[in-house]
Length: 301
Image 1 (tube, one colour):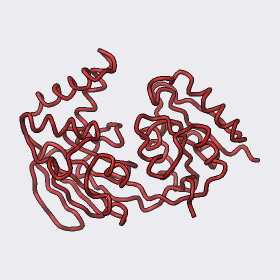
Image 2 (cartoon, rainbow, N blue to C red):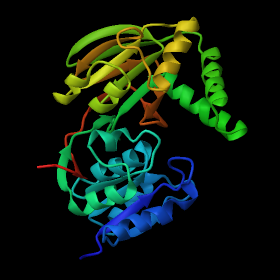
Image 3 (cartoon, rainbow, N blue to C red):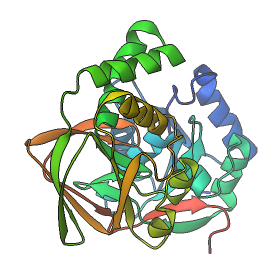
Image 4 (tube, rainbow, N blue to C red):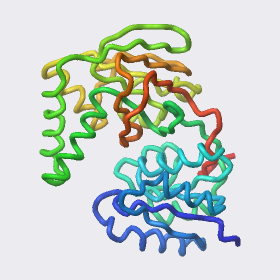
């Protein structure tokens, strides 16, 4: 077989056992009878940069070995390069929503066999200002929680108490909700809310106990705006979403559509995409990708 596969490995994905991630990937590929170039993501590099380097060298299949953030970074590089190369997944994350939504096995050896035996499935993914998100993007409270959480983790270590503290730190710094104008499929609406969350994964929405999965399966996106703007209710709702335990119909108003524009009163805003954060210019345009990902998945026709 041609040596056409490059595996982009996040050595820190999944927490416990991460130190042996490269060995685990190598063993899984060997058991499946696959040859591949294995490249751990170096500190400060990111999965997107590693994927772009592999594409520049002519690899036709990039395998993301990590969690949803790693897969999202590799997918972004693939689509920005035209989408011709194939995407494979070895799920090593905490939640693995993208892999589970495709029906991929979570066991590394079984997932590697899917790389050998699976079929290509075309998957349209979410984009915000042209950047990919597989599961969700958000602005407002949730990206700020993620930002503070990483700072708290770096100082005090990863724990439930530290995660709760990051939420409280974020909330004490918020004095007023975002004011924005939404245009969804041409219909305009103004709102004030501390959090906007857009879902592109029907699997994750159902796992989060949120409505909108049917709209996503029909080729749309589901937008959620937090109802609460202050106080204990806001703490409860934000933390429920961060843990994937939102109460359906109680904490969020929902809109669905295919083309979403968010106009804010600031020129740039912090955006979370699949748990990764970056600052983007406004307005934000959210839509499904014009070009599909070509993903190796089980049971695809």
